[in-house]
Image (cartoon, rainbow, N blue to C red; front, side):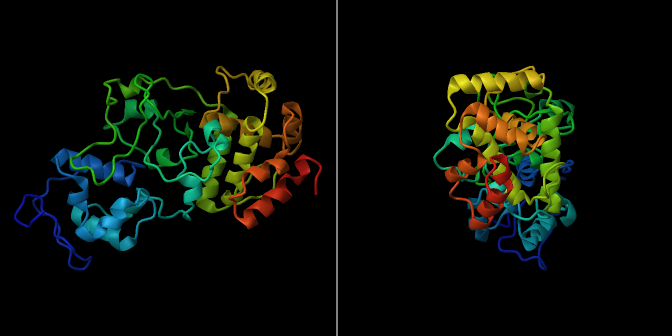
Length: 341
């Protein structure tokens, strides 16, 4: 955009010499926990301008091509964005994961603990723009907005409403996703309605089991502090914890015969007094892991015996992409579940 156009952006501006937009109408106030790209799209849509051209310069092409650019952005870029939007740098930082250690292999894999993911031949996953939503949050929002935690691949529960997050519209089955910054027109990532017209606030919200919520809360705390604490287990880093959950989910879905698996899952559903079947969703994976870990290591050993599959130590063979140090820590951790050493 040239300097003569309305709401112009000064290209290649640096932080010391940045020019604030005196003529730009006030942008929507960022809401608590809002994801930075969602807010940028919302603001661009209100002005009917492309977000990429409105907030980025020509030399930002590499950043625009990176789907995860906003999770750990450089401070100089955020400072430049603060100058252009009038929003404090600290507020913009709070809309990212700047204060977390970057682990893209943990955070950026959609449906991290889903049956479909653990059964794929390639299990590393790639960054994605997909996210989940909580319909109860949307119903009470002053304006519908995407929370940054909804973009985490392992997040399956709304900790505010203690209900399962949903990743697809129940009417048209389209997934919720974050539009790219390169989108040529303002495109708010979330509104009161899905693209098919269905009212998002009316999506069903199933209550989450306390065990699953407890594990997710502990996992979230470990991402912030670096250490995971769970009764009956040694302290773990999240780089070991998340692959461990993968192993437990794989224990159920990899190599088990359907008729045996259905019988075992039915027994677990009865024990946990579930109102819905375990079908292999990311939430189900989180719940199964929490159930196994709540009686560690005996329940892991019993589960593999009941399913007639390899114990967790054997499941490690399917995860050969893991770093050697992580595999070694996992090997030592799961040795007690099958009597190995």
